[in-house]
Image (tube, rainbow, N blue to C red; front, top):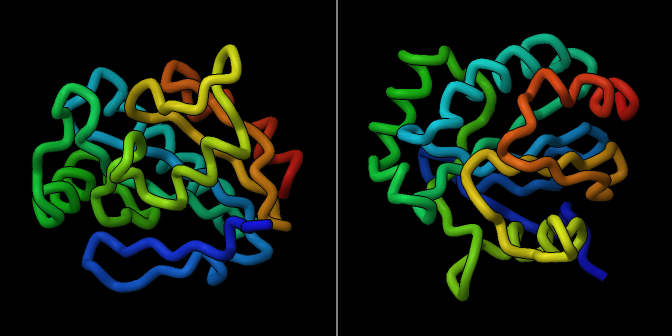
Amino acid sequence: MASIYDFTAETIDGAPAPLADHRGKVLLIVNTASKCGFTRQYEGLEALYRRYRDRGLVILGFPCNQFGAQEPGDAEEIRSFCSLTYEVDFPLMRKIDVNGPTAHPLYAFLKKEKKGVLGTEAIKWNFTKFLVDRSGKVVDRFAPTVEPKALEGAIEALL
């Protein structure tokens, strides 16, 4: 059976980023976009990261352009936007697809582990969030409308 630690992504710079490097940490994995109505959630995600990173929280942002073409930029544009606009310091990954035949294998796994509303697997929009415990188990999935601050209790329970 696959584990979250079996997957490797790429950093926004294109370097390999094995999820096994985060073994023992609590992960919040989010598909992001720079031109979305939920983009302001970068601010809340960064606040969570700053508050809890020393206790073992890692947030991984995966830019995705599959929803309304709201992440059209290249890696440098995305990094610059996130840094300058929201002072994002949590790890940003290479832009990926989260749905369909070209979906990143990590996202295929996440969607199978924690289905959405009515048992659907598809990601509905940007800023869907998956919470992973220290043992690598996907414990929850949160809709884009759930603000990062609302995740504090769930995160604290895992730290």
